[in-house]
Length: 419
Image (cartoon, rainbow, N blue to C red; front, side):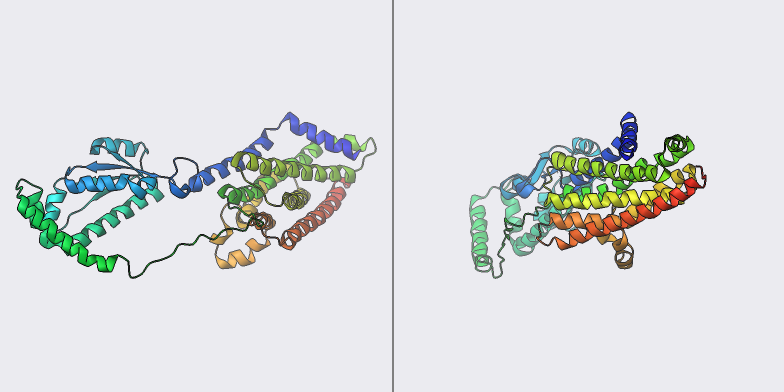
């Protein structure tokens, strides 16, 4: 008889699968959006960093601006920068269409004023308000260029008049050769301090042990958080049929054929736990297929999901036992589950919470236990005790809540309570 109750609930689910599909699609969609925002695909530079696409408007058209343009598109800079050379109006147009991150403008007569030693010279940076990270990088690069130009001006400003004459209309080759010779002598003297540098650094990339695994994935970091929240909503969806069946007197018809309220409630709890477990398999399996996540220790991950399924079923059974009516259940369950998911760090990383909240509230939330267990497994560590303790705690709480809820519900139904 218990098997028939569970099969009946699954048939009802298959007839109207859209609430379940929605609760499965939303965490995957949110994971995709957040993951792509922090480390998505696209045109990549060295090291997997996305190339910065920006417009360079050269209104000066001088040898100095030509040098800046060349430097931004060659060598190492070309691996990270993707400059587009165009006029101001066209650059503003594609900026408004969110096709570029920023515009760098070299103003008219910039070189001549620079060689004259005029003050308040400015390179213009127009940032895209729809982006935050990439425009800030362009601004910092402009700051680096300004710092370099200031350093050159302070050290070689005595030679600027001759350079200006050399590159305007006074082509005195003797003067040019003399100026070049002086610059060469000063650069040769500076070489004693610049090559080799007095202070340097050595970059070392630590190789990860092959036996540990634990490759970090943005998607693998986000999906457990989203899953821990939406699995509770799936448990709520599965248990909501309880009040509906009581209201429609389905339970009364079942009791006429000899099946008691206890068997009916047990079937509901098992159906809810199985629904959450199947949903967890779909979510984490889809995460592996869609996002390329390699789940470490899948056996322990399955145990953690099974424990969480029992917890979700027990929690929703207890809420159904405490709610006096179907209407009250619909009103309170979603709000309560949202609060639990938020406090447990499903929507925001727990590291961003205040210390008191993180230590005394978040640490008590079962969804936080699941998140931390999955992340511990993903770190590739061989310490399995902590995840197993999480499984034990989730299972124990779920079983206790389920037993208490079944006892309360059976007494209410036996006494003639109605939704």
